[in-house]
Image (cartoon, rainbow, N blue to C red):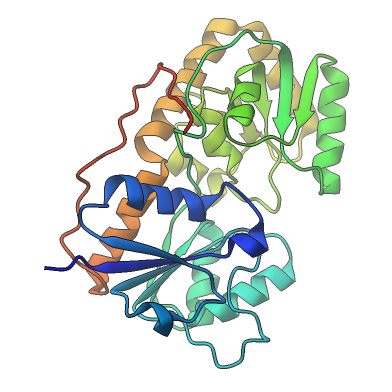
Length: 319
């Protein structure tokens, strides 16, 4: 009996990234579901008819426009299908583009809780659920390192508000660090910081919440409980929050945790356990498949047979 076929759609030529949700989801299927499904990776430019039919199609927003562009008229997304939608918070164009494309999908996972109702209204159905970002433990392995920096930040400085926040923070803490890093290099940098600072764009619960905590970083982030952050982490015990846009409050909290090593490390360890337990791409794939089954879109009796084995407080080799 042939295995059910799943197509995962994303465009590496457009995104030009060697990480991100599409690749991590693909790796989960290859690593944990290979015995039960046949997975095919297709770029949106491909013609599905050239590869046969698929029992389920997974489309993942890679952070750039990874859907068929307007110059490909008449393109119809193969069904049944699922769309993991993100980056709608960046600007109005990003919102308009993705909301229009979402109309083609049977099932939609929204990275940001506050976008669920607007997306339901845009697509005209209620098959929309909250699917936050996640972390890949193989790419962001837990570890301990000598603390070289009081505070630090990993990421792009494309937003004036973020630049202003970090400028204020780094002036208060001369022993600070900033860079754009990925994979193990990012994890190593996070582990060398006493306090990992976060500044979100338009109240998004971004990747930093999961990647920094996964590898054992202590995260100080804006208070986004209004947007679901308290449902993902135990505030004060797994991560620490500061009032959004309040630079002085962030500095005071950072000073406290820089000076209180044991309390800080206990929170960092708890945050890492939480992420590795509930916020990995393995967990997100499980959630996608369960929603697809509940909706009657796809059910091949899929269950993990080769789960990823990670032991907390132990280094994992980055593959």
